[in-house]
Every structure is written in structure tokens, then in C-alpha cells.
Length: 274
Image 1 (cartoon, one colour):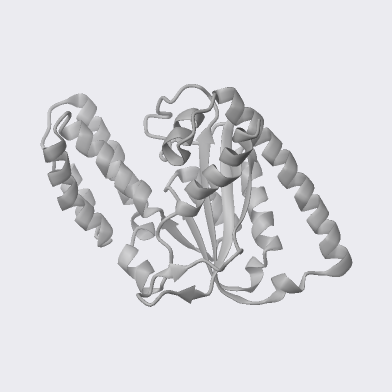
Image 2: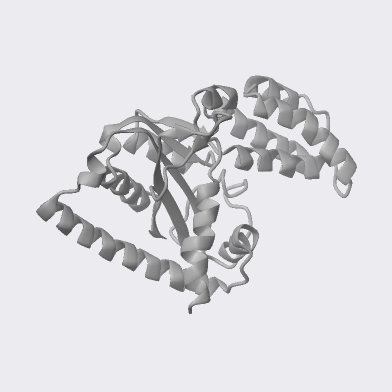
């Protein structure tokens, strides 16, 4: 799955072994940099990090390093639990401004990445430490953006209990697309028509209505019935994390594109140099 994610998100053709090797090297570099940063901070302090910020955001995701891209635990990656051999990448950035249309803008040079092949528990401590070092305690508002996976929700509840949690809108749309393809296989026209109707409910944050609509679908295929059950549950569990109009009124990010960019920038660049 790691190879497939790299191809889709970064346009890179790499072997599973390359993903594993580079991720481990990045983890070592990050650890060394953190050690140096801690030493410098202890001796000189960091005036740059003492400035209060309006919003501090964290994005996180994971990519399976194994060669198999099969769904885990009865659902797609964002619904399944993490596995030890997974590349987990997170980032921290600040946002203090919006553009003329009210869309949030990341502060220049404020994005830092951290990741490794490790367990969810270890990754939770890693991203928490990164956020602390970046001054999360001084952020007026904290936001955690993820794909809606249970393990990410649990880490957010544990390490950032006062943060606003948001499910990446584009991951949420992907869940609808997967269902559209199950309902209308090999019929792109019907898939798009179905998506237009249901994506509107998602984008407007009307998740309860979306769930009722999904569960009301009349089908007899056992595989499709199970898919509807899984996706309806996914949206139901994450309803409060999908109030996109509410988040946009607060000028918050609703997508984790910065993680996809990080996949290309952090991992992709290193891969090309091996």
C-alpha cells in the first residue's frame, strides 16, 4: 500500500523496500534533529517560538509499508486500525491570516513534519512532542485534521483534548466515491450523478441526513449492503468532525493537503536521491 500511496499522492514509482528504507532514515534524521533542537532550546531558549499564534494545526496520516494494499479490519485504510509496519507522517503548522475571500493561509515557513515507522502510541507521543516544541500551549486555537480513523481520533482525544477535530473533506469524499463505484460499477455517468447529490449533503455538514440517505438505499447484493453499513457508520461516528460550514466560518482548514505535499517533499525527495 505504501507504493500505491506514493504513486497516487506524489506521482512516484518506488518499491516497497524503498519506502521502508527511506522512512526509517527519515525517522533517524528527525530524531537527531529533535535531540539537537532540545539541546539548543535548553541552552539558549527560542524567541521565535514564544510568539502567540491564532491557530495551530496538526495533520496526520499513515501509509502501510507492506506490499499488500488489501483493506484491513473490514474497511478501507481510514477505517481500519494502524499496524506496526506503517509509515506515519504528521505535521504542525500555524495560521494567523486569511486571504481576501476568507480562506485560511498557512504562515510562511511554519510547517514542520515528523514521522517514522512505528506504533500508533509511539506516533502519538511523537506528534505531541513536536506540537509542544512548536509552542502549542500558546496557540489561541488548536485544530487536529485527520482522515477519520479511530486510532487518530483516540490520539487526538488523548494528547489534544481541547483541540477542534476535523475530518479531511477530501478523504470523506473519497468514502462516498468508493460507495458510488460499488453501487454503479462501470457507469461513470451514474456515479457522478450519485456523488453530486450525496456530496452536497457532506459539504454542507448535514451528516445525519447523509447517514439516513445511505441506510435507505435499497440493494440486495450482500457486498454492497456491507459497504453501505461500513460507510454509514464512518460518517455517523465522525459527524461532529464534518461540520464543514461551521469550520469555514471560523476560517479553519478543512483539508490535509499539506500531508500529501509532505509525502512528496519529505519522502519523495529522499527516494530520488537513493
